Image (cartoon, rainbow, N blue to C red; front, side, top):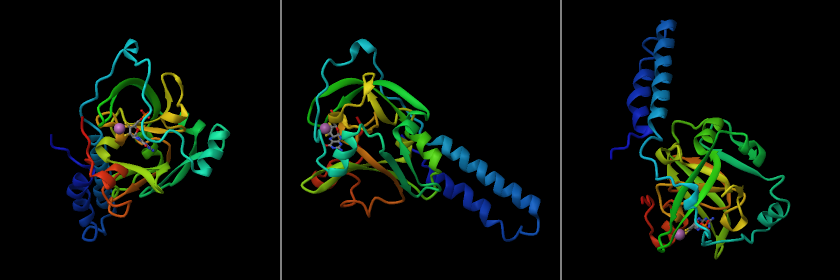
Length: 249
Ligand SMILES: Nc1nc2c(c(=O)[nH]1)N[C@H]1C(S)=C(S)[C@@H](COP(=O)(O)O)O[C@H]1N2
Ligand SMILES: [Mo]
């Protein structure tokens, strides 16, 4: 499948329009029209990303009676423990990096944003699967709220837990970030997200393997390159064990 990335489209469309500005500077109406069409083109480009096949969704009857907990189940980080003890009442998700309006989003604010509920199968690379229902804020809504900048190419999820002092993190590209089923889940099977499954927020990126689904998400960062993050391979297990960055199922 050929993915038309937002960046590729923008480099084709927008700079061509902007390059004409100097020459046309005297003609305001025409310049406005050209810049306006650049805007329209970049909006069209934004609509093209985040498309593609949906992961299969299941009937409520298929929800697994037990859903294994894997990896970290209760981050020992003092700040995490303090917030968990108060039910994350005064916690807020930080969203920053290449965005126009970096912000901090408390859980009630996230719950008030466009949401999605889906029943999907989680596949762990270690060879187990489980079906669960997830409800969360659409990542696309969050990114639209902060105004993703055209230079942004990846979204990084910084987590509250660490192994041997190395913080868990994960990253996805904009096609997955804007995909309809990509959510930051605050509920599982109709209940507030249980701590071992990643409270207060965990990523669901349904077309990829379990390790991409970052739990205990503390901060979301938009970046142009993954080079400066961790060891540069885009995720904790990618850095440590050379796991695939794109873990397509
Ligand atoms: N922050 C964080 N996210 C994580 C992990 C982890 O250890 N820490 N483990 C990953 C792995 S390998 C899997 S299979 C799933 C497990 O999610 P679950 O505990 O809800 O089953 O979370 C993923 N996300
Ligand atoms: Mo996993």
